Length: 326
Image (cartoon, rainbow, N blue to C red):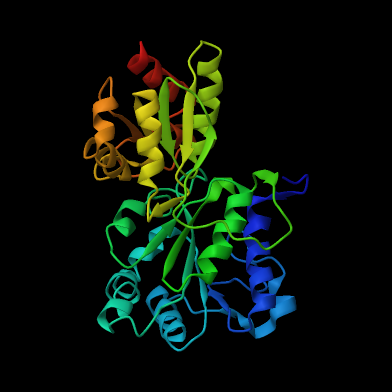
């Protein structure tokens, strides 16, 4: 525990800075990440300390992601910043057919220790082409790891672990979380990938989420507690590999499961989480069907009112839990 407070943005920056001070093979590359500090100001003044290790790239995601993959194969540990997660579709071939496959195709003799950081999700009025949540597509690709921290402390700790990992890691930073503040240890201690965190404990229902929706789930838990309903709130933190055992253990205790994510419902990660329970002995503990809350199956609107309207809110989460347990 610590009283030291940082924003989510500062925590990400500190993780990169501490890692780069230790390892000269780490570079950061992306569009306008130097003097301009990136679209969301995450890299800040890092260029002043690290000089040409902070690399401003051309506007060609395929080119600089491919460059990072090659550098990683040759022993460097690049960190790539993609302005918006939507733009990963531009370099999809590099991620899916190259970065994710190299270790396997070379019989384990080659690694791709690369981190791809990107601003994901809605909430800034950036409209349909800059507001998507594409984590389910990424989790469908063997060879990638996918991380989605919800707090500043986890943003730092999980990024340190991602940088140290010898596999390509996609690091999803929900853009509305950047200004949020929380306690962050000064030490460069990694948070292990693949381990969920139980943020609230209860007996009546399990709520599973990640990223931007976690604070909403915690607020819903507060609302429910006033009505005599207590819940486990599980923050997955790492989406691939997923800590399915943590979800199963909780469901065995509570007998109810609500899954909440920002991505659209159809084909979303909620289906995989539900299957992890229904395909195990935790299924027999369920007292009601699994409930999924997600964004509506529409492109994200530009209008702030409509944009918020496609998302599940605290009231909807609390109402769903109440419906299940009563």
